[in-house]
Length: 178
Ligand code: 5GP
Image 1 (cartoon, rainbow, N blue to C red):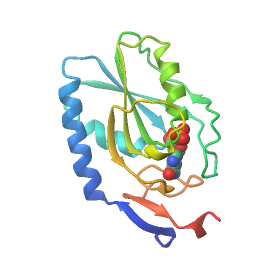
Image 2 (cartoon, helix red, strand yellow):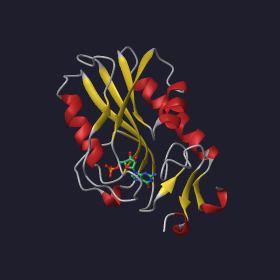
Image 3 (cartoon, rainbow, N blue to C red):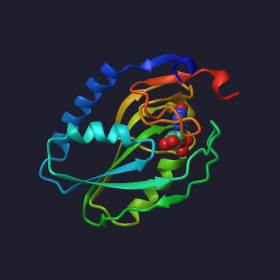
Image 4 (cartoon, rainbow, N blue to C red):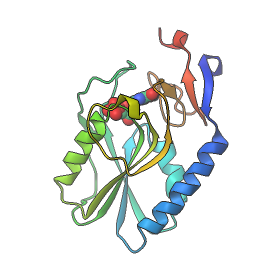
């Protein structure tokens, strides 16, 4: 598996340090608020589980699954809810936790959908952002790392459902998907 990773973009140490910073910031920003963290399955599971440990506040965690790329490396722009929230979010402070924002189409859809449920506030925290590729206008409130336009795997991110368990973010070699 490792020989299909061309290079390591963000190693474990850097991820850990940045997540501690984000956790500190979120702890300050959400103090005294009814916070619900929404982990977007499946890509955001590793990021969410590390991030919530650094938010030193009472909070709830819920999950949502949306369709993304299937097993190709380009966005189709079509978003479907595969699993909805179990909890109500009306009047609560909602933080969407995403693995990566690329075209922004998924997040744009998600934000519109969740806003219609009348949360007290709605913000987004993503581990990775590829701002060059944006097609939909979305505000991302907390960003772990801005990265260039390369297809990355690891730390929750997959290619054809593999590589999610790599502890770092890496760039997949072209041979792995061509
Ligand atoms: P968007 O709708 O912003 O184009 O894409 C969001 C989703 O596409 C992400 O949640 C992620 O599942 C997938 N995605 C976007 N870029 C990458 C990438 O470089 N690697 C992987 N593995 N998935 C990506």
